[in-house]
Amino acid sequence: MVSARSRLVAGYVRVRRMNRLYVTAEGARDHLKERTLRPQPYGPPRRLRADVTVSVERSQGWPVYRLAPKGRAPRGCLVYAHGGGWVNEIVSQHWRLAAQVAAEVGTTVVLPIYPLVPYGTAGEVVRRVAELVLAGRAEHGAACLAGDSAGGQIALSTAVFLRDRHQVTLPRTVLISPALDLTFANPEIDAVQPSDPWLGREGGRVFAEHWRGDLPITDPQVSPLNADLRGLGPVTLFCGTRDILNPDARVLAGKATEAGVDLEFHEAPGLVHVYPLTPTPEGRAARTVIVDRLRTALTPA
Image 1 (tube, rainbow, N blue to C red):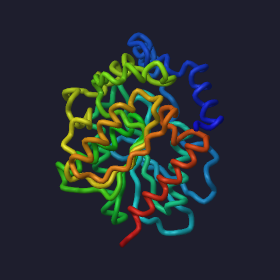
Image 2 (image 1 turned 180 degrees about the horizontal axis):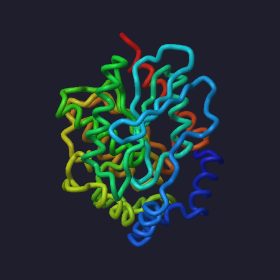
Image 3 (image 1 turned 120 degrees about the vertical axis):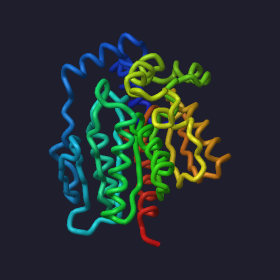
Image 4 (image 1 turned 45 degrees about the vertical axis):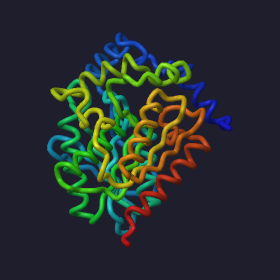
């Protein structure tokens, strides 16, 4: 049963027409032009949890934020890639999740402000996020990856990149409504689209075309669903059924089973895109699972 608050969230998304930048190619191109002319702010809210410290440094041209538990040594680290369709900046919901993870897991959360389209590209961003994970491992002893939506694509592509280029297997990767195949070719999307108040195929393709840069759209650094999943570490996956990314999430779950990957799939009937970030009972329950899985992954044996 979908909670009343989740129904309100879905209604709010629809009334605000938050899908207008995704449902048509023209809307996506207009939004891209607006974001290029008027970039969004990306800094953290002035008020976050009092039990978390926030710092920032510039690393190879990127602002990289770190959230850490106040007054105690952190346990490992999490590199988090925020969502936003590769075109929108980090928002307060991302910051609140990062602060919750830092405080309740007792870990350092690394939040890179990566370049967005039309300037950022998948190959550049995946390589740099991989470097942040490797640096986190060197400093803290263990590192996990997480991301939502477009950031979920970055997180899974980076996990594959780390396995293939650095022979690194992560103790946990958390994916929240990830974009997995940037061709958006799954025929099951057609059945989901009428119920999705947030995303759309045609606009997504516009942003994806910029994001792929000089890589083929099918390259695993762009569309991680095309990767050989064998040898990846454990994955926790969340996706609602009112989300056009859900059909590919189901494909990922099947491929992971065939490849022998420990993938835990939390499919939420009737819920919208990135529901774990929403102020709903279902969102709170999902965040509790995220904290638990990361705490287990980053706790020394």
